[in-house]
Image 1 (tube, rainbow, N blue to C red):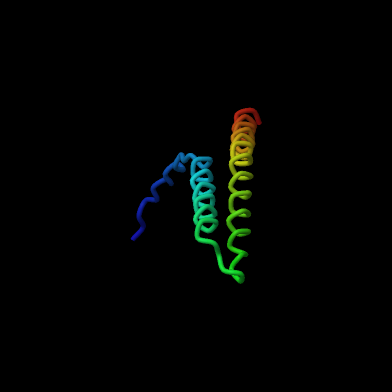
Image 2 (image 1 turned 45 degrees about the horizontal axis):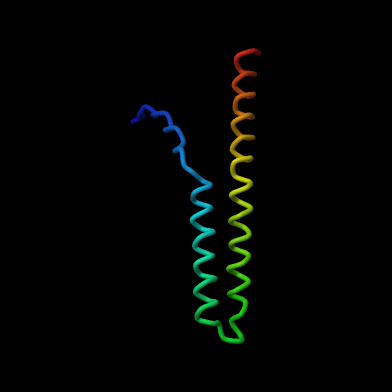
Length: 85
């Protein structure tokens, strides 16, 4: 029994910068909580974990728009090359 293959649905449009901002805010909140509570002497690495998480989030908010622009440009070039062989 062979079934007809339906085409794949188009990719979902998401706001990836908003996701990165939410993650960065989460790390910032965790840092504030840790600073208020005061980690024990052996658990100070959590502070650095929060700082690195925030830095990665800021980098992602800068990088994601450039990545999406590059991908859109590449897809447009690919579509143009298919029209004009």
